[in-house]
Amino acid sequence: MIAKSERLVLRKIDERDAAFLLELMNEPAYYAMIGDRGLRTLDDTIEHCREVFMASYDKNGFGMYLICLNDEGQTPVGFCGLLKRDWLELIDIGYAIHSNHWRKGYAFEACQMVLAHALNDLGMRELMAITSLENDASLSLLKKLGFHVTGERVHPESGDGLHVLQKRLV
Image 1: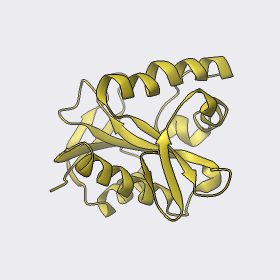
Image 2: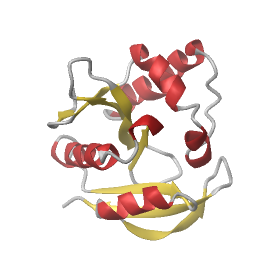
Image 3: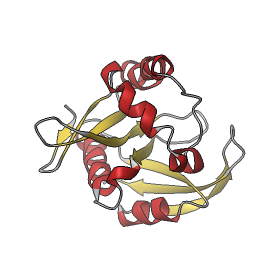
Image 4: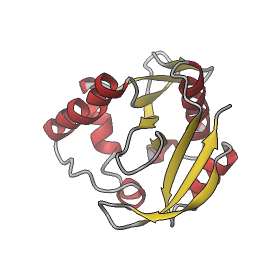
């Protein structure tokens, strides 16, 4: 477990999460705001868990974490965590919430937990965030978390326009 609040638990993603992730990452909103990862089967998603999420823990010491309700079944609602992208100057925070769980404050709460983890457990002093130019909800959330827009850039893979934001943690 990475962090726990009254409502949520953050833990590392593993293969047992593949069915939930397959559903989340194939939602129309995920495609529109984050992109199509080409995951169409459970096997594709299990491999993605290994090659992306789990590999990041080994390589970087951090990564994306599953957001679960702090209930008996630890119901998954999304993921949130830290990413090391070659084309960004700093580590960035990212998240995705399943549409069944929107507008409940889970993204904000999970991001706060990840920010605390970045500072207190990983010793990070500054983070970046990116969001598509069309994603007003994400931009608003990041500003509420204390990030400020530092500019715009083009995503090197998709060619989409992005807001680039930054936040000092100390």
